[in-house]
Length: 120
Length: 97
Image 1 (cartoon, rainbow over the protein chains, first blue to last red):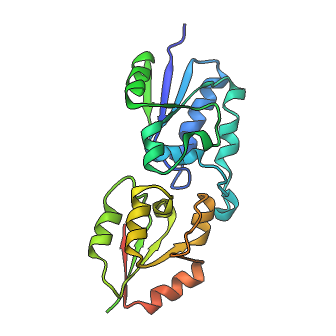
Image 2: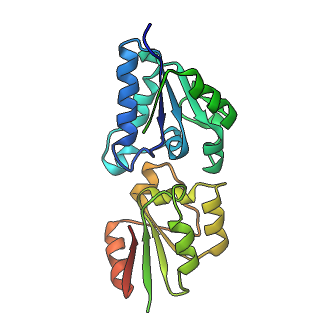
């Protein structure tokens, strides 16, 4: 049985390669059928903001890749409810419907549940 | 003497915006670029702080559009040529690196 892995993504989508790299790990893990989860924390929740426009910065759209997560078998998707609230984001209006909003206590339990954790 | 203050980091990660708002003078202007435009996310503490101050506030249009930030009417959106002009029209530029 493969070890389960939780990726915690904390980087905003346009400030550097961090957000995309975290997502790449998750997609690769999903492609190999690893039990993998993804938690959006702190500025990472901005990756899920609706109506972002990658063309404004002549970059590739991260949200298209995010939509592919369930297709890659990654169904354990979570958002920190506190991070979203602090940033004026409504958890029900995010671009990844599958992502479940969690309280701090629930996140503690989530981290506990996984064999390994990587925060980026 | 006027200063253009330039912020480019997310207001949720550190104290740059808070410190800048504490230090900024009446003739000064503030430009939000990069992740600093997240300060205009409605309902957040940085948004409320800026809304309460109503200073000379500028926002780089492309950075706001990329992040789906709707710029309120008390801030002006500008492009890069206008950024250059803004820099020239102030005695100095303080970049909060």
